Length: 497
Image 1: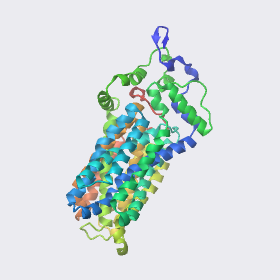
Image 2: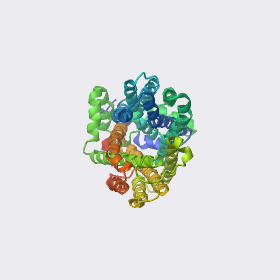
Image 3: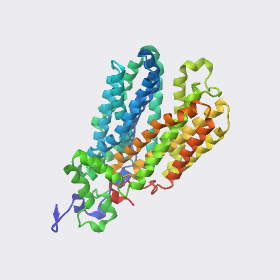
C-alpha cells in the first residue's frame, strides 16, 4: 500500500495504539482446548519418532540370527539410522522454516511412515540398511513438532508445557518395548517394523486438519491467514481476541516508526519468494552464523554434543551392567529368572526413571528459569555419579547411573525448550535442527570412544571422562545470552534484545 508517497506494509496502516501482537493474542485466549489438541498431535509425532529409533534395540539379535549378520553388520544398521538423523535434522528444520511448520510436519510423517512400512518387506540386508537410513532421516524431524507446538503456547508456563510434549518420547520408548515384547517372540521383526509405522501414518492423516502457526504466517506477510487462525483458537477455547488489529512485534516495540516501511518485513516476506531453495538453505545457515546469533549457535552446538555424548555414555554403562556384558565383577540388577527378558526390562527401567526427572524440570523451569534449571540438573548429574569413582556393588552402581541418566535427560529436554525459544521464528526449526545434528555426532562417537572403558574394568576412568564432559556443558550454560522464561518469542534476528 502507498501512504504519503511511501510503500507501507498492511501492519503499518493500522492504529498501533489499539494493536496486539501474536504473543498478546495467545495470552488472551490462554491455554485451552485448542492447545490440548495440539499437545496430543505433537505428542503422537514425537512418540512415532521415538518408536522408530527404539526398535533398533530389539531387531538386531533377530536379524543376526536370520541373516547371519556379523557384529559389524548389525552395528551398521544403527549407524545408518543415526546417519539419516544427522542429515535430516537440519534439512527438515530448514523445510519448516522456509515453507511452513505444517509442510515440515507432513514431510516428516510421509518419509517416516513410507520408509518404516516398506522396510518391513526388505528382501535383504542392504535394502534394509538403506530404508532405515530414510527412517532415521524422517525421525530426525521431531523438533519440527516442537516448533509448531511452541508457537501456539502462551508465554506463561510455556517451558513446562514444552516438557510435557517431550515426555511423549519416553512413552514412545515404552510403547515400542511393549510391542516388541509381545510381537517379536510370536510374529518376528517384520511385524514389529510394520506396526511401528502406524503412529507416523496417524500424524499424516491428522496433519490435514492442523493449521499453520500464526507467528509463522505473520513472518511471511500472510496477516489475514494469521488472524483467521487466531480467531479459530479463540473460538475453540471459548475466549475473545484483544481489541484492535494484529501488528508485528517490531512495530509494537517501536511505534514511532509506523510511518516508515519495515525492513524486517521485506526481508521475511518478499525475499523468500525471490530466492531459490538452495539459496534459502545457505541463507538460513548464514543467519545462524551471523554476529547476532553466532555465540548462541556455538553454545547450542557444545551443549547438544556434550549432553548427547554423556547421555549415551551413561546408558551404555547401564546396559552393560544390566545385561551382564561388562567384564567387571559387578552383579546384574536383574534376577536370573528374567534374564531372557532383560533387554525389554532394561528399556522399561531406564525410561520410567526419566519421568521423575522431567517432573522436577517442569517445576524448576518455570520457578527458576531455563538456564538455572539446566545448571541445577547438570550439577545433580555430576553429584550422583561421583560415588562411582570408587567401586560400588552392582545394585548401587546401576541405581546411581540410572539417576544420572534421569537428571541429564531432564537437563537435555530443558536445553531443547531453551533452544526453541532463543532462536527467532525465521530460523527456529533449522537452528534447533542443526544443533541436534551436532549432537548426533556426539552420539555416534560415544560408543567408539567409551566402549573400551565401559566393557572393561575401567569404571573410574569412564566416570572421570563423562564427568568432565558434563562439567563442560554446565559451564557453557552460563554463557547463554539471556533467560527466555516469561519472554515473548522473536521473529527476526534484529528483534532480539
